[in-house]
Amino acid sequence: MSWVTDPAFWFGFFNIIIIDIILSGDNAVMIGMAAHRLPEKQRKKAIVLGAGAAVLLRATLTAIAAYLLNIPLLMTVGGILLLGIAVRLLLDNDKETNVDIGDSLKSAIKTIIVADVVMSLDNVLAVAGASHGNVFLVLFGLALSIPIIMWGSNLIARLLDRLPWLVYVGAAILGFTGGQLIVEDPFIQNQVLIGMDVLNYVIPLVMAVMVVVGGYAWKHKTAA
Image 1 (cartoon, one colour):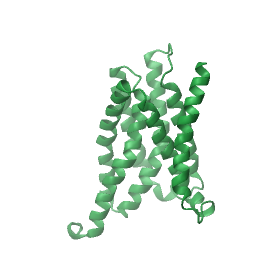
Image 2 (tube, helix red, strand yellow):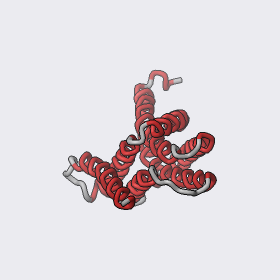
Image 3 (cartoon, one colour):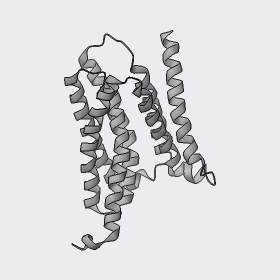
Image 4 (tube, helix red, strand yellow):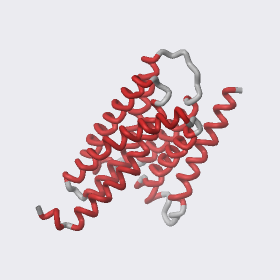
């Protein structure tokens, strides 16, 4: 019971809550964007499967977090993939297709799983760092992410139904997250951004703007 009076434990505990709210929120935005065009029944299924996949991936990645940090440019590649997913979700938002529900559900789940792999990286590394090797805190972080992702995804999907313009806000959030993954990559930090701390803030903002402006221009060019 020594953890009760251990300030480091409680500091890590509250850090993980904040990390999960912020980083699991990104996953919720992505799942909500991918699922909101599905009918209600299929939407719920996509959200449940997507949230389940996110937690399973986090549990797996947590077990190998130390090894992930040793892979050069892994987070950069993940950030670039997430930028592509953000643009794709933006382009798909208003697309009218004759694809049947089964195919649409499969497409949404595939998008969610691929994005979850990418977006779970930052959460896993952040939680692993905040827990300082405490297994209870790691498990607490994983458990807390489940309701945040599921409740948040459903709320965002419903908001997108009522306020379609929010898809651009979601795309900007995903673009910003992709930029953060790139600048937080240990290789980029140690080899590229040395002494240029301001770029840690500028690059994510630029990526967010590029996703929204580029996606908007591409969508309207295709429509024309």
